[in-house]
Length: 465
Image (cartoon, rainbow, N blue to C red):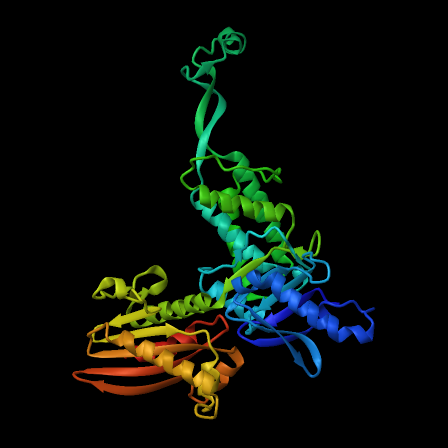
């Protein structure tokens, strides 16, 4: 029995019950009946958590074997699951990016870590997941949280002992008389006084945590591009924290009540606790990992935004991002109570005098099919989705009054396939629609899932000319 299963995102997969829920010693005549019962129990016991991850489960068969069909959406991560055999969290599910961990890591660093994995507040651990997930996944989250703490590093009053030319706070008279006045050092007054200082205890713990992750990341150097960028982040943080001697923190940390940045510090202390317990660091203490989740749809939007920023610098265009609520256009319904969608929010808008490019990023497989001329080849489900995407993007063009407006749909494409499409000139497809005095274009853009921004930005820049 394999306790942890690996599935790709945005896919339909079958897991046989005999391999996941049954012991190898189960009598053959009981396998079919027990497989169905435990498959049903599994979905009933874990239905809520599976829904939170966008996983839809159904009992079924494949090649005569009974088990569960699992349909994943755009979420990736690791989740602990209750075993129908023991009612304990003995099982786990790891949902991986369909474009490989290397691609996800390269894009993560390419976006400047705008989107990082979310560690879930679930007490159960995911058994053996550390063997299946690169350690940099947790390190990225921890280092971003520590960077936020360092950025808002608070100071507090701590008692200082110093020799001053004038009294301050509490004068240590006995020491002053015996050690200074007796030697004629009248203006050297030993004092003890409160002074506003950085939190040395927190700084020492942060320093230790960054060093711990730096050591774990160095063991992965050369495997992923993202590791190099995370090590650079470690160096930057250590430059700030070098004033504190690193010290492994004790358990039971508390954030002072009423602190303005209490949420930032709470997350930072959580990150320190994970590192102290050695959870998710490549299995250095045990084989249980933290439950975490990341939605690849906004992650891909952030990647397209990074490419668009590069194109904007090349062409002199201005960029607005939906992620920062810069592209929001409110819809005013009459009567207001009957309104459905309240606003339109394009993912990215590039603007130059006379031309506007509206980009809608879709984490779907359309580019692979469109790029190979497979539209109309009987794939009705994705054709319907593609039409909806086109209509949505065309609706965005009505928001702008420049002489030329381009509605661009951006789809993810594996790096090797994208390079092949580029050689054949199929990375960008364009169609022109005349609309009054304006020229409206529709563009389909295949985006490489590789972390290399320059070539993709150059192709996108063609739409601005």
